[in-house]
Image (cartoon, rainbow, N blue to C red; front, top):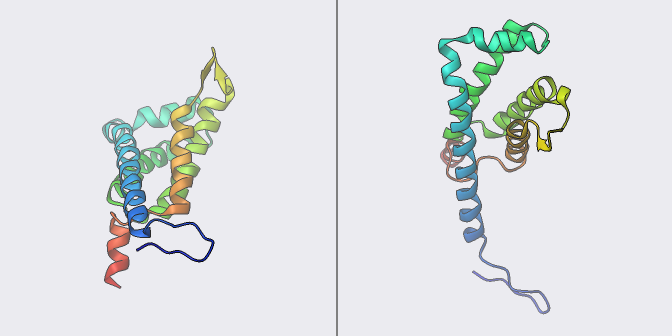
Length: 149
């Protein structure tokens, strides 16, 4: 349906825009979720790597921090793929990636040898922030839960 008024421009049907935006959000969630899972699942069988890395970076309570990173990567990755609790996931992802960047990358500076340092953490943090504002879109368990109400 196209809407017009006397001097207003014609706007496209909102369902087309919504479907396109939801498809984009689905793809973004899938990519971010799979990347988190690829990082986190191997750490489940050798958590001492994550806890040791946290200790070497000077993170307070490194054993807890290492496990929070693992659980964040696996848990948030899974939830993002499903599109479940997406706004909360986005906020937690933003917090986790801010911590990763601050402890692992910021000490070396933003640029190292002319290359951006910690771009994965920065991009995933930006994805988290975007999902806080947008939610998961219509192709998600969040949307299915809303439709059932």
